[in-house]
Image (cartoon, rainbow, N blue to C red; front, side, top):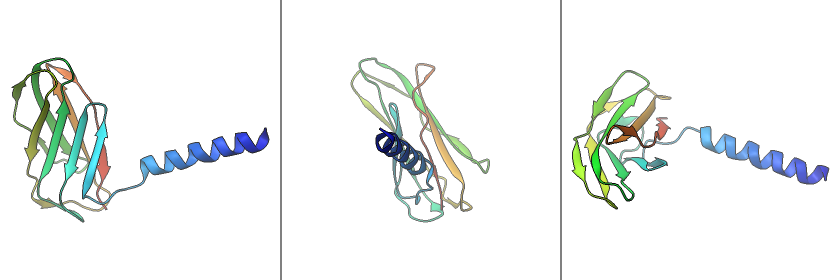
Length: 121
């Protein structure tokens, strides 16, 4: 019983550590129906792609991307149909200090649909 509880505690600790570990800028991170993808490696970020899955509801979709250092930009707004993936881009074209958090919040018809973030190292 104690071994089983210890195993569960170690598994939870490993999952928590993995969720908070900084990531290189290149990659894709998702939360609920919203994803952010960077194609750049290191602290320079030229372009970020945002995708939002609409599920079975049509709506007006856009997203706000921002950093912990104060940079912020909105993607374009688009009316999309059901079962569609909206794609928007922002172009920071700048170096961010190491440990900067970059986040995106997706919006569909005024409601928030996910908040993925990553840390630039």
